[in-house]
Length: 144
Image: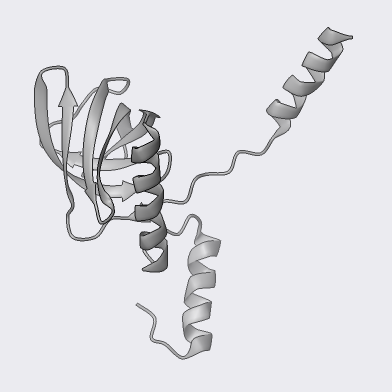
């Protein structure tokens, strides 16, 4: 009976649709400090979400490299352990948060809420971009 229950739970987890955490464009070239071992790198934050983001550094970091990032937000600064991922584009390298304390998590959530209120959300798909354009046109605002 226990094995059947475990198998059913695992199937449910496999079938669960993954939903990407909303991403936000970071304005004002926000500075970050990344620590990799004894090395300190200054960077600029490009994207941010609850699960990670993208940062521009002066040098490329190998995918899988672990480090710590310090981010200053409107709700205060926070630090978190990160893992670098592949280059997001020629200007920014993706990372994911792998550990963060409760105070840091709350500051990140508050900062993202403020970014959402400012309309800094990154459109996920072409359909999302089309919907945003349609809303602007229908409301009488100019399309950017």
